[in-house]
Amino acid sequence: MIATDEPGRNGLLVAGVDVGGTKTSVVVTDDRDRILYEHVLPTDPSSLVGQIVGLVEGARRQLRQDVTAVGVAIPGHVDPEDGSVSMAVNLGITHLPLGPMLQAELGVPIFVEHDARAAALWLSEQAADGSAQAPASVAFLAIGTGISAGVVLDGTLLRGDNSFAGEVGHIVADPDGVICACGLRGCLETIAAGPAIGRQADETIAAGRSTILSPHSSAADVFRASSLGDEVALEITDRVADHLARAIRSLVLTLGVKRVVVGGGVAAAGPALLEPIQSHIARERAVSPLVQAALGDATVELLSPTEAPVARGAAAIARHRIGLPDHRIGLPVREGVGER
Ligand SMILES: [Zn+2]
Image 1 (cartoon, helix red, strand yellow):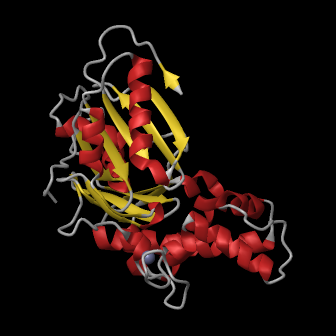
Image 2 (cartoon, protein in one colour; image 1 turned 180 degrees about the horizontal axis):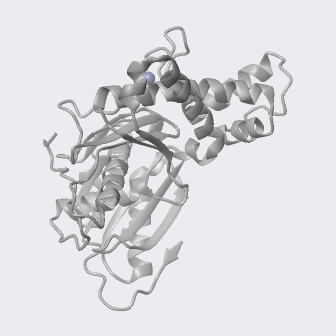
Image 3 (cartoon, protein in one colour; image 1 turned 90 degrees about the horizontal axis):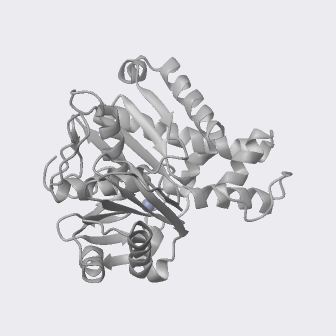
């Protein structure tokens, strides 16, 4: 928990909440996007609303100042107009009117957004910060309990007519693979999301392969073992990286973005994840002039684990939606409902 006593005025404060499959965090930011408070808890899917209310009330108490609005970023199918979330398969949510429920408890405007989209918005604004240029295009690929992408294209946050834009976790990766939480077979999530990486370790252990991994290993354990040269862990890491490289290629080819940022809990593995992804991309570039031309000088970067782009993006969305002035230089990303 961090709470700073900033001298002078901070302007009106907003809170941003990141509801993840394993962790839920809150940040409170001022009108210059400075973090005044942050706190994180393990996600309690049985009491999601109560947990978010508790986090925001804790921030209010600690800062001895109210927040003007709250942005909540959550995976699943989000309707930013009515604040509802549906089909958040990794949180066990079928349909939840999250925004109205939180507004009734907290008494301030609540704005709900898809988690990867909130992060993409914040990353794009960061890139534009300090310049008068329009925000750059960026794709944020979140790899955690699930996988999805948030995209800002030519300065506009993409939602799509169906609000499913960026749900790359459910594109087919292995037609003969295992059944996904969404009901389909062989989605990217069944290979490269955190629980899938642990499952593949268990499968190889059950098959009697020799490895330093123990049963019920996490994705982080697998990446650690691959750094130590464990054959089984290296094979799993290579397969995961191969599929993520293909997903990144698909994002670049479909959207024309030149910047892909990889984040989420699994990305905390750092170079143990990024390096094999980069080498698969380099292989694709080497064999395909088309991929080489499309990727050009595109960058694939890992987000620092110390950043909180989802919660900060949620706070930025709350700031924009209630029309608070933004005192940073640079143009805010257009994220109005219905704009694409
Ligand atoms: Zn799926």
